[in-house]
Length: 155
Image 1 (cartoon, rainbow, N blue to C red):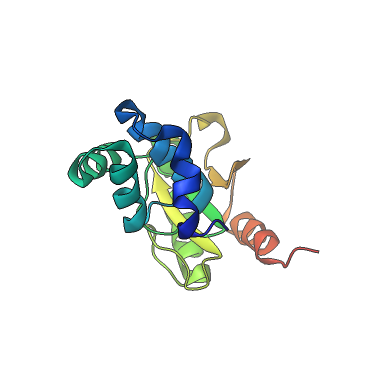
Image 2 (tube, rainbow, N blue to C red):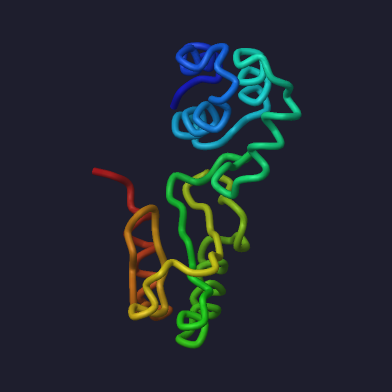
């Protein structure tokens, strides 16, 4: 993981370029996984804009996060097709298994669980996405199996 002390080096290509706030935010989030307070301050300093401006941009766009996410991000589709085919029950099972609610991250930062409006795979309903892998036509048993796969230590 990139240390926050690396922020000036990561942001060096954007120094003095006021129109680079979004790109700088994306670069930091790509490296750290989220936007710590120090990043907002450093972006403002290096791009010669106010912290309020940087924070305003970061809060405007849904893509930016201010808290660390888990190593694996699980997204449960709650669109109409997925809802009708049982995604609420799958979300409940995952909350029970992980010991967290949707919108939270496990204490060990292994998993984050999120409800999303739609993943655009209605023919595969119900759908859960782990990181960038789509798992379709899920049952509660299959959801547990997928979770188990991601819970195993890497060999």
